Image (tube, rainbow, N blue to C red; front, side):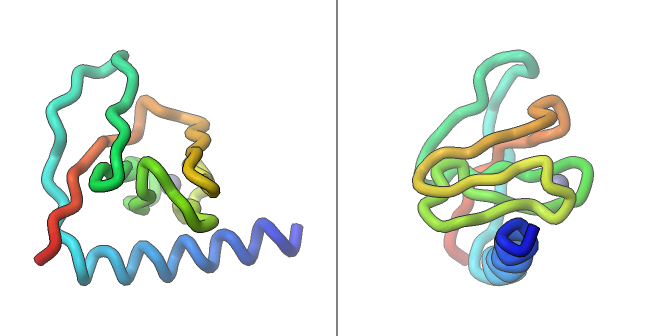
Length: 90
Ligand SMILES: [Zn+2]
C-alpha cells in the first residue's frame, strides 16, 4: 500500500505542474473508439479532474485512481469517463 500512496502523491504533483505549463484542448474522438495515444495526448479524468499522459514514462495516476500509468503504458478502469486532450505549451 505504501507504493500506491507514493504513486498517487507523484500523480498529484504532476497534475498541478502540468496545468501550469500546458493548455489542454479537446481531441476529436468518438465515444466507444480506442482512445488516441501520443506524447502530446493526455487523458482527463471525469471523476477527479486529474490529468495523466497517455504514454506515461514516470509513475503517474489521477487522484481517484481511475488512471494509473508507468513505463509508457496506462491502465484505465473506467475509460467512459476519460476525455482525451492535447497538451500545448503555454
Ligand atoms: Zn480520476
